[in-house]
Image 1 (tube, rainbow, N blue to C red):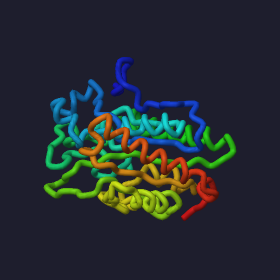
Image 2 (tube, rainbow, N blue to C red):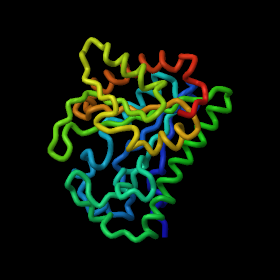
Image 3 (tube, helix red, strand yellow):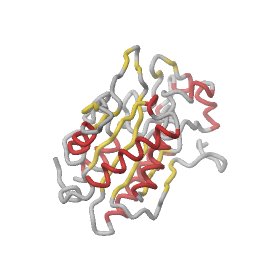
Length: 260
């Protein structure tokens, strides 16, 4: 028996399907939804609504960027605790048994068959949709940009995180470097993490597979959740990022295929 039924949210949501910008937005941790067959993974709704269940504010920022940039966006339709779309299959944190000190009962001792079922019904359809949208945008004649939106908790494992926003990248600097430079010039004196609080060389399955391996320019942003928890704060980041990214994607080298 599968996990999905007709009343369940789909593995992904797509917005602004006809967006004209040569960029695809993705949001790997947009949702806190758990399939009903999984019984909330043994957690209450308050726990699922915390940062361990999703990236708080990321979906709203992605929606705002999609509208502002006129860009297509693909958002995961399920909680990262069901299966993390931004971790390599087989990684212990792909289906975590604990997160930030909280035990996930519904993930304890899963058989390989049940892990495979979650991958089949959620992980792979989400990534297939990203591939499909990249191909569709590319067919217009210009290699698209891939831009991933995340948020991070202000403290993790007992340690405070001072950054307002982090820019994550691995080998391709085409978007990350000018984005960091522009953000550091902002009059609000933002604290910018260059591959902090996470590194694009370690936690970037989506970008590596869909862009790094194919030579598309790409990067991810991580915005601190206490700075993205109201409509006003969401609008702040949408305006800042859309203004900066709209200029970056016009650069001549951005829409070239380059393997770094």
